[in-house]
Amino acid sequence: MPKFNANLTMLFNEVPFLDRFQAAAEAGFKGVEFLFPYAFDKDALAERLARHGLVQVLHNLPAGDWEGGERGIACHPDRVGEFQDGVGRAIEYATALGCKQLNCLAGIAPAGVEADKVHATLVANLRFAAARLEEAGIRLLVEPINTFDIPGFYLNRTAQAIALIEEIGSPNLWLQHDLYHMQRMEGELANTIAKHLPKIAHMQIADTPGRHEPGSGEINYAWLFRFIDQLGYEGWIGCEYKPAAGTREGLGWIRALAG
Image (cartoon, rainbow, N blue to C red; front, side, top):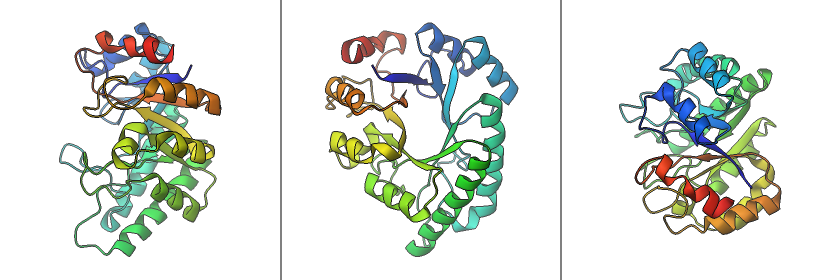
C-alpha cells in the first residue's frame, strides 16, 4: 500500500491550521505536508509534529506574494536576491521541522522578459538552492504545474522538468510528480512514472475534474496505486486535493482504492 501523507493546506480545513496536525494523526496519517510554514513560529510547528508523532514530509520554498497571485519567483530575473534569502529561511524551517525535502515553485513567467533570460534565471536559482540544501542534508524538488489552474506557469510538463534537472546536473535536484497536474497537461501517467521513477522523490494526488478525492473523477487510482507499488516506489504520496464535502467524510477512498 502506498505511503500517504496529508496536505494540511488542503485537508482538515474544518479546524484552524495548528489543530490540523491532531486531526491528521487521528485520521491515521503518519506524515504531513503543506504549502508554506512561514506564517507560524517554527518551534510551535515542531511541537505539534512531535506531540502527534508526525513526519514533516514536505513544504515549499518561499514563493513571493502568494495572496497577491504570485506562484513562485524562481524564474524572475529581478527577484534573485529575494529567492536566495528565501532559500536560507526555508532551510531554517526545514531543519527545525526535520523536513528532508523542499519544493521550489518556478513561478509564472514574467511578462516582457526574453525566454532565454527566464530560463537562465531558473537554472541559476535551482543550482544555488540545490547546493545550499545539499549542505543542509535536504533534497530540492521541482514541480511541473498545469496551466489551466495557473495560466502562464513556467514549468508545466514532465519532460521539461526532467530536461531542466539534467541541464543543472545536481545530484540533489529531484522531480515532484503531481498526478493531478500532469493528467491535465499530458496524461500517460503510468508510463511517465515508470520512465522517470529514479528521479521522482515525491508524488501528489487529486482527481480531475474538480481536484477532489481520488475515485471522484477520471483517473483510475485503484490501478495506479497497485502499479506504483509494483514499481517499488518508496516515497510519500501527498494528498493534495479539495474534499468534496468534509475531509473525514471523504477519506473512505483510502480503503476503497488502496487498501
